[in-house]
Length: 293
Image (cartoon, rainbow, N blue to C red; front, side, top):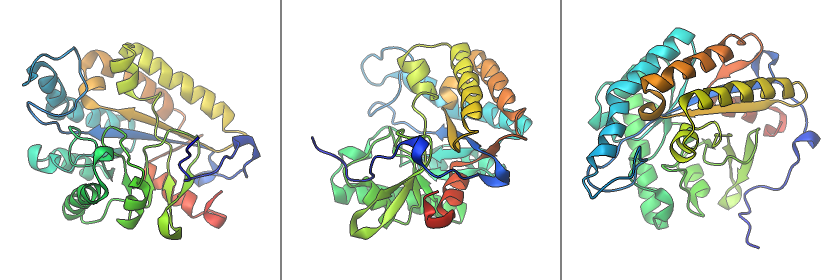
């Protein structure tokens, strides 16, 4: 059986116990995906089975997220005083002027998320994947005035060398792996390492709503139930809870109302948890004694 060689097995109950900031045991972050798609070609989530290209039905549905849904989600996060890690396709600076800037103005973390979600990086050869990472990183660095610390591959796509390429490009953490409830150090070639911060595939509106056809209310109930369970379990082990959102899905009015109630439930417990960003989690964990908890 072929393995990846990035990390070894570690059972959660056997690990050292530590605290997040302010002595909290549960770190919660919102991962807001701001994505662009090609018209007439490429990948993209579907509201309904698409016809021949150009697939106007699904393209327009996704485009609504950047024109309307993302702005409403920003207002909701403002009202709840919740930070976000904003996962950005670099092409959006060109295609949606003012959108990323609005989240920058909120003080949100800007995370690399490839060029566009019409492509997967994991299908590219090493030179082309390196060029994709370099192109997206250069645009985010130019626009934000600093290099992004974290990366989520478009479509959670990685090649066998993606962690190596990200570490070599200066990234400190990646978000593609949903294999743990705590950050995990990945080995990289040349004796280096990069931190994997948990990113959810259960509390993620694409698998939940698009793939499993769950309602907005069911998705919101999942968030509340997961939060309550993880808050209780965090008494014995520090945990990370991420919530992955896409504006064209949960920005829709009938889904946003139950989502707002779920996030308000979390915000009401802010004195018991650490409401933060993925980058904040990575920075804190890396600063622990030995960098491994």
